[in-house]
Image 1 (cartoon, rainbow, N blue to C red):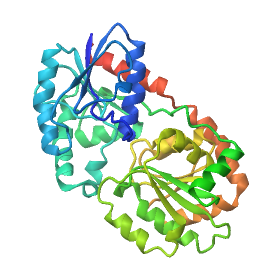
Image 2 (cartoon, helix red, strand yellow):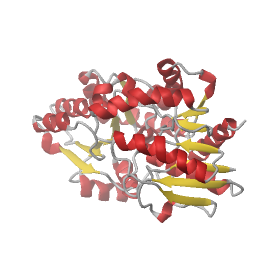
Image 3 (cartoon, rainbow, N blue to C red):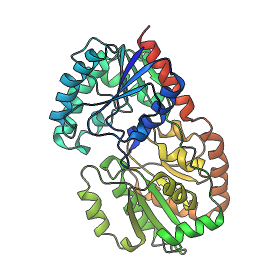
Image 4 (cartoon, one colour):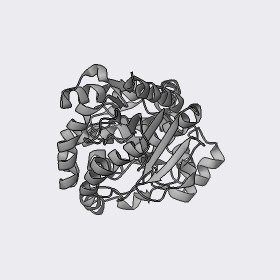
Length: 374
């Protein structure tokens, strides 16, 4: 069998959520199925680290997909050409984009449809593209995979597609995220937070991540903080970050906030391990990988009670309403002062995180591909 795969988000040093999903699942699927041929379709020169096994043929197809007009050209004209050239049996797209101009069976991984509910969070043309084409992609897909039952129900409602056409394949956890020892924690805090404890946020700087709400809540928290706790924000800038910068500049305690930018996964492991608590309070998530990474690292979690997050967090996190700044502040106060509560969440987190593994994600995604050919 020939499986063509959209691998345009396998970008060395720039992996976001979907890029990590692509890396972890494709690495396993290609190695576990040497009897099949995989065509990895890149839109720019690729890193050889992403050619995981000998049954992969890498193909570079221009133009680089940096803009909605180029997305249209790449998926509607270039992808059908490559599928014909390599006589592909199926096209797998980990970011959900499909071609409307091929009869080859297609599997779309649609992680969530936040753009339907929060279109103004995105640049205007990007939002228009998503809302114009993704319902078409969902309709023509032979199978759809998504990362939570919340997203499965949301896709069904939003795009009016058959519920039974969608397979849930939870995200996994990078095995590097384990508890760190006291010496490592001291070294990490010395490096990033002047030796002080810190709340941690991990994720792209993006409106739906509610970083403005987190900054305002932290500013209020500092009015009662007696332990000189910092806030560490790890992640690269994406869309519409002007409000984040404005909120930061207007903070009374902005000197206690540290923006690190993107961090390599080995270093991120150390940052997770030394955190007092993960404060992850987005408005919308299809899954929420940082929640299970924190659990795996033995770190308690303050988390939104919206969308998929209660499904992922179970009974192992401190839930708040992300639209209520005072609830985030109160959670920070409570969890910073109550060591027994933190330890309780840590123990529950170790149990909850066992539900998620990339091995299982890859297995279920492969089953989804096989169903597309039945």
